[in-house]
Length: 138
Image (cartoon, rainbow, N blue to C red; front, side, top):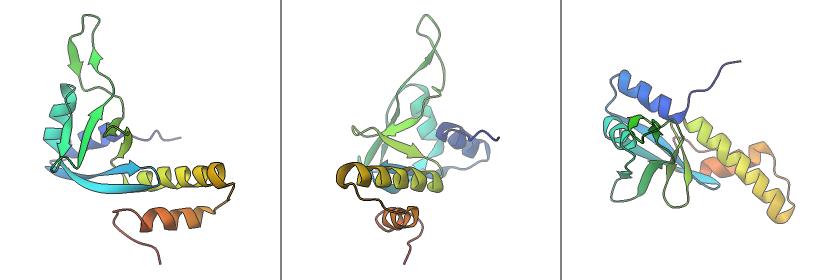
């Protein structure tokens, strides 16, 4: 079984590959938004436990932890997942992971809220068509 890389590892890989910017996908319950970030600036902010602001405060990206020694000295990048805004939205470096997460949330919420069962295809269509992603489904 292959281990999936974390969002932070994927961002670090982009830096190593020489990319200046990349897309991140921010979950907003049943949908997601696509944003462009400066890879180096984002990693710098995360390394010192600061927030990274996207655009004119469209989103604020942060991590929930710090990688420190017992004396509180910062050891490097925290390995926790990235979050966005006060809603603690999940941040993904892979669009398909964002879609899969939102589809799961949509299906679970439909069952919990109304008892309605929706198919994976219906949920995927809803998520993709209501998100700011790279494609739509007719």
